[in-house]
Structures are given as C-alpha cells and as structure tokens.
Image (cartoon, rainbow, N blue to C red; front, side):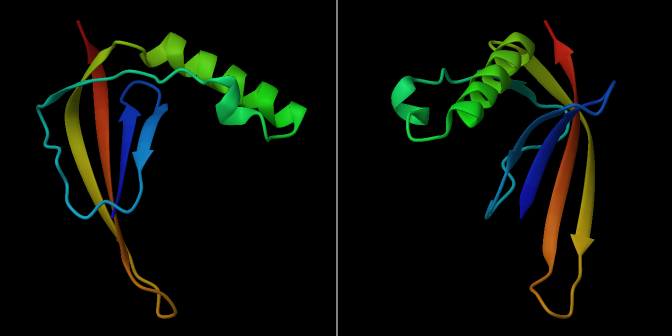
Length: 99
C-alpha cells in the first residue's frame, strides 16, 4: 500500500509513504510536518550535480513544510490491477494548512 499526501489547492505532493502495511491516518486528523536537514555525510557519495539538486530540493521542502500543520480533508482510494504483477492499493489524502 502506498499513501500520498497532497495540498488541496494546487496538488503539490507533500510526501509519499511506500510499502505501508496499515493506514494510520484518517480524514479530519491534523498532522504535524517537519523536514529533516541534509548533512554532508548523507550526500557525499553522489555526483556534484545530484548533490546540488538534493540540497536545493530540501531547501524548498523546508520553506514549504517545516514545522507546519496540515488537516486531512479528503481521501481517495485506488486499486491498481495487473495480471502480471500483484495488485496495489494507493490512498491519497488531500490536505490544507492549519495554524
């Protein structure tokens, strides 16, 4: 099961949880967000161009979501069926910022 969080107003992806075995979230909950800092040891083995992108992307996440709260306002469930692979379940939550 995969769980995605999106901002309602512009469909910005907040985060995605892969390989979840259960769903700990429900509509109406308020979730506290935070963004982990990147440390040089986390990205030192990557090529320079990728390092710069990772650092830039993390700075953007910090500006958007660090120490913010979102309320889960709607939920969508999608089952993907494929004869060659195992079926999968995706749950999408649309969120809005709360103060």
